[in-house]
Amino acid sequence: MTFRRYIQNFVLFICVSLALSSCSKDVDYVPPAGTTDMAITHFSYDKLVIDGEKYDIDLVILPGGRITGWGFDRSTHVIAPADIRSHITDEVNTVIIGSGYHGEGILDNEAAELVDQLGSQGISIHLLPTSDAVNLFNTSPKQGLLAFFHVRN
Image 1: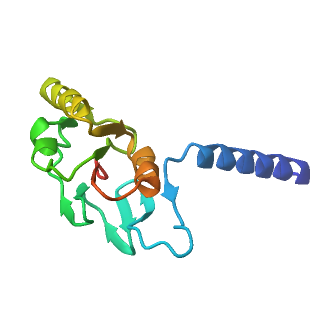
Image 2: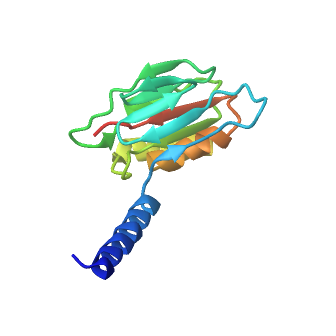
């Protein structure tokens, strides 16, 4: 290989690498200095890091910060109303639903009706690809926040 061909291949490699990295849905977050709020400091395909703990499961963060598993149906990628309803309390004022790395999670008709009902009760609902949901979670007030994160496929 000539030196010129080597340089062309190297430049092509750099360009492709930069293009692919800009398509990444991974999230790395550094909380502001002095904050004590719960934070998701890393999200990538099949992994969340919350306050230094690694998770490779679909999960729910309840108001108050308790973390529990989410029995998300990965075979259908349908978010059922029971998934949401079972965690709604009087304390909840915002619901964030991370629908997967590529946003493949969808609401069934009954869940969509529940979301509309909750919205009419003044509860803010956000259904987003998980990377966007992570960013919204990190910048939202935590009081009354209920968050679902589909992490695994």
